[in-house]
Length: 574
Image 1 (cartoon, rainbow, N blue to C red):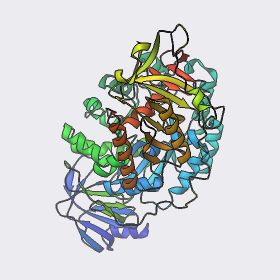
Image 2: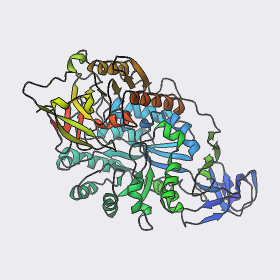
Image 3: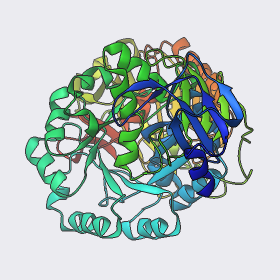
């Protein structure tokens, strides 16, 4: 503190002086030339400073605060925290709020604790959302059950939590459920003022939304239209505008951002695949997109820095100002946002797209794998993959995959057109946690697959094993291949040959390989699927959402087909 004051007063040289750039001031909205004096991990002053033990000339550049991703599932990148840091930091991201519910659903809270330990000594701060638990869902089989009491214990043990994770959508039944209301009350009792609860509210009616907000769920990352987001804003909800590899909402939601609303909006990626991280970037990509769309550049920077910092109580970052952490991203302009340098706590950690500090693949080779359960298949899986219609049945329900992959539609088709030539595939979800070996069967239309099968253990949100295909034997081999890898993605041809595979041995969701290596293997499985006739650009992404029984309209779990609107299991055949 004494050194900071001396440098701030101009009586001592800075450790590092960033000279000649224009600084984006997120408080007053000005962009002005100024020198920035750094002492240790803090900013000592911004203005007319000229002395530094190290002087870095950044003439022609712009300084913005280190970028903050307000919400992301790290597991959806297939990367460990360290692998994600290696890919994201060169793009200017210095802090993320991670929702680890995918790994926790597969492994349990031990998976979250392992991820926290894997964060150590990274040039990226990862603050996690604590899984808030949910009412028991009898529509699918989970690997573990996480209740609020257990989550509260984890909260007490670690310091890097800033939120409870998302509640389920379609809370109609739960808001009348006393156990659910008790859970909300317990969460509100255990959280501090800096802990928020995230809500997934897509397609929830006005009446339900008001009840949901009354239950103190103050953020929303799932609005899909300007009207929906505007309604939420009017209720005091902070809008997380996401643009990731799956859900892309910038075009729909930027219309709500103006001088009156921007302070209650932040940017997040939610999901970002390795190839997109490498080729497009992270939050820097969102800034480029938003400004090209027409958003004011300074407003965009605020939504990527100070707004999420304030939302999650991170009072030490989000601005370039005295006393703040020296988390600074150097860009070529506030329109192109090409990242030139990245400083994390006063240390140059990336330059021109490359890390300048080493990050090992994992902090401990055993970490993140010790709690991973074996991917188990029922011994009678071949017999359970039986799609013969019952006597007298003339039609079947079919899941129609739509362009956005997340929302589906329900159709009825006669048995005569339930064939690959009519773009109708078999789909099965196999319970993989050795808890009974249940298998849900259905049909799906929209993949374009002509032959063969695709299998994956990335299946929201409980991540059982999903397989779609034309031939039952190919489906069996695809499932077996994924199980033998300990989880991952696989493509099998119609003549039962494994064409491509991406192992994800950490919970069936993640790998400790590099983003570049995973991106290559992911491209190989996608290309192999397209070689079998698949017309969906990212087929495994589409498969992952077929199993999520909280997003309309017809989904499938290991228990069978789910009518999401009615929150109930329904028959496959009629």
